[in-house]
Structures are given as C-alpha cells and as structure tokens.
Image: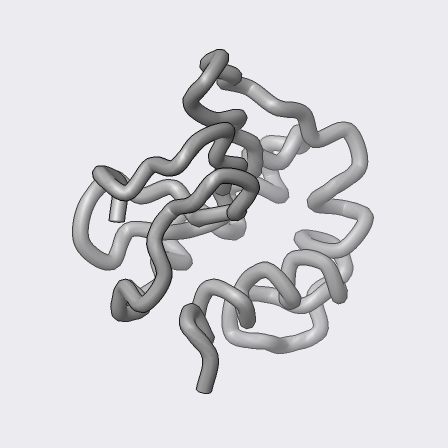
Length: 106
C-alpha cells in the first residue's frame, strides 16, 4: 500500500545498496551512488533536481532501469520529493524537491 510504492522501493534500493531489482548491488547503489552526487538543476520558486550518479559506470547501471508509473494519489506539494519523468514509465534515479505546489507536474 502507500501512495508511491514503486518509487519508494526504488529510493530505498538506492539508499540501502540494492540494485534495480532489489538485489544486493553495493557497487551501483548506497554510498557508490550517493557519494559526490549534487543538485544539477535548481530553479528558484520551482524545484531542485538531483539523482545523476557522479561515476559514469554507476549511472549507466540504472539508465535502462525504468520504473512503471505509480498512480497519482498525492500531488507534487511544496517540500515533497518526486521522481523526474520524461514520459510514461520513464522514472529511473532522478528526483526533485518541490519548492512550491507543482500540481501541474502530477
């Protein structure tokens, strides 16, 4: 249950050292993913985007690991973290923090 179970599972995999399918993969997740990661796009009054691994080989491991879309149950409200998307079922590792209510992104 929950409002974004696939997105939450992906985030936990990235934090806990697991790969796209939940398998143990410390070479591409956990500290290997997050160390040196930076915000790469910040738009005042809109959002701050992050989630591109600083090591190319780590990022490449996630490039085709697209997530199916979770149903929209909650809006992109101020302070919420959401996965970036480029279309249907296209989420991977990029996320953003909403600086305002961005329901147009739901």
